[in-house]
Length: 172
Image (cartoon, rainbow, N blue to C red; front, side, top):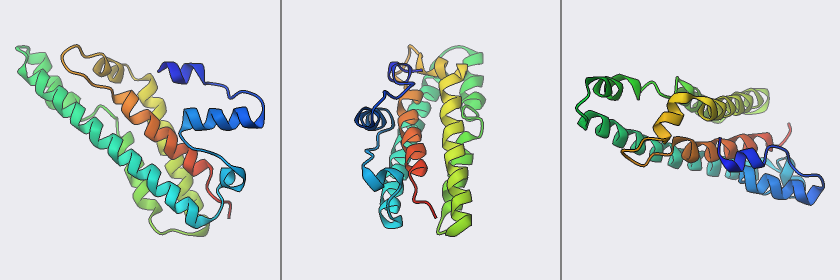
């Protein structure tokens, strides 16, 4: 877990302090009605930005993992070749697929269906982030001495932003 997460586990007391914590840790800026979602049009803009941020982080992580795969294949160790060929594809244990499915499922839904899909998206983002923060294989990749890689530091902020955006969706 990064120092930011460890040091920011509990929001400070007071409305302005909580707002500052939310902005610093979750990457969103609550303000008045917008803190609870505001209107659907404004929410759609925030959700698109959070999804775009996720996409950028995901692409950056894919590039890092592909670089690591190339490094492992270049080593003279058959075990590293096997990890490169089989282990890295399964690194996210299906969490990425669940997240993408929740995003696609959200589509143009409305009403109760939209609430269910937003809940599924929040659950997928939270589950993925929790996995990243605790998985030993992810930690091992992030500590690779052969190439810079930062799976947690790249994906976790984007996942937190998705979670916060969905949590602040307008209430039906």
